[in-house]
Length: 410
Image 1: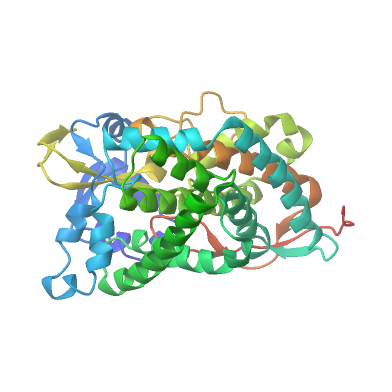
Image 2: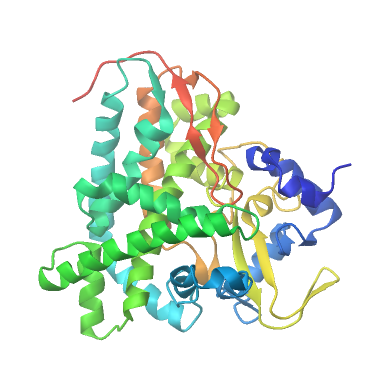
């Protein structure tokens, strides 16, 4: 039988990681991977316990990864290394993380989120109007990419004229999170995208200081000036994390969710017949096929898990996608049940580092699936789907669909 490490670096794993996850759960729930140069945890109970244990497991993992970059590459990747060793929002731990989260949460007011939900409803219908008469669409480029990109851009305050460029930089930046191990070529591309994104956002923040508006960027600047002090790097990296987290999470989940419903036509019919199930359905879809499959932690002391000691200073990958399909936690975990009760999944994280944009993502997903199911009758696959070439972010580059043509609404 092929080794687990060989499976982890295969193209088949990127296409369908779940058989490997199950093998890990059964054979080695606490597993050291030479291929990925870290520990892997796949059981729900283990992942949940680590997420809750901020004393023994810190979020500041990437600084350790940066130390492993070959010496001959450190100079050319200096900007990249500096960013990933800075206490930005996603890399920080309490008390820094608590302070930054407080600032971000104040900016994401209930009024702002309610307004963006109304905007998402209008955006969904506008985007679907472009395809409903033809009876065909490719979900990512036609709908799943532009909808959250526009919604998050407007909420945060990014110029509409630069959304395409913003998306390109974002994809470059996120590429670093996809491979299983360190890849210098990937880091070079990720550094280029990240530095472009940070420079662009830095200019926008300076503009908001001089000309404040009602957007999130203005709120972050105002909070900084009012005493909730954030360093320049914290402010910039927090904006990067907020924008990319709110955008790609929804994009990937829209593709994952639609594919999952097409694979479970009885559940699609049930949801079409009873839209009141939508809120629960979104939670079940995130459990079944979460948009980001893993998060990282760093041990601050020797830790024993299930009889295996993980030494201090080790990188641990928490495989959220595996935990959400753990048969010890969920009955029939490899099937969708949109009526499943008590869906306590880890798809948006949990504890100190839960996804701050999850309220926005849930709203976008509920509205989007409502409109897709209502306006694409008899929806079905119209070609071969193309998965993202990644083990971290999980979604689709292409998901061709056919459906019965319907008139435009607007």
